[in-house]
Length: 293
View 1 (tube, rainbow, N blue to C red):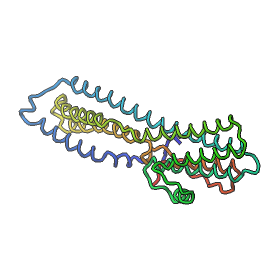
View 2 (view 1 turned 30 degrees about the horizontal axis):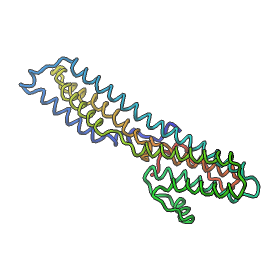
View 3 (view 1 turned 135 degrees about the horizontal axis):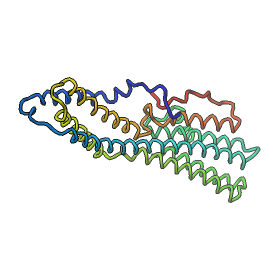
View 4 (view 1 turned 180 degrees about the horizontal axis):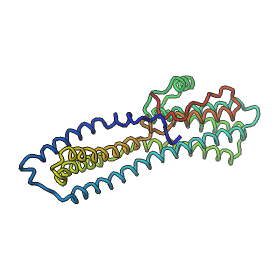
């Protein structure tokens, strides 16, 4: 699930088409400007644009590394959600054996809805009909729906602890799992709501265009076409790398490189329904589904 084979090169080109256009115009303009008599007298050692290009490369490496860390952290957090969801239902089944099928199914259904609701809220999408139907039936209304569903978990656990005779240790184990789910939800919200500093992108763009502006003055003026192509290609590669990091920095943006929250929620649902003996187990869809159209 770490690689989506359906990602097209045209998707990426569409993402940077404006930058390609601007850089093309900029490269042609600078190349023609370098042919004017006054500018032909200006000649820079190639070491100067090379030094600036090295600085840009280092900044891009840092930006890409930070973006990948955010993407990987999101995937790690959702891996923990998968494990904790299974563990919660497994302990519910263990602590409330025979005769409590209704309560077990209530916990199971709520946990399934929680995973879908969390993914949809992180992607800033309207809740699906299925999630909304559950919320309406149980009269759950809150600014943070996933948190309200965890509250319902805790409330039912509190009532069950007193009526079903849970030991303090059993109650503590279940509460600990709910706490871990809440912690994972908070980490996802932090990743969603913490944006990469805009000033960093402005700095990178400025340096890339400065690099493109001085590069022709360090090249041979006798080869105009080669000069324009080099002035265009190298900055475009820098811009493409930066765009890659921008796409990766928000793992819940509902894009092709998104954390596959829908596929993971479906995996959780299948596992939970099989654990509880539910016959309505959905068919497994293509795991390459990273985002929803």
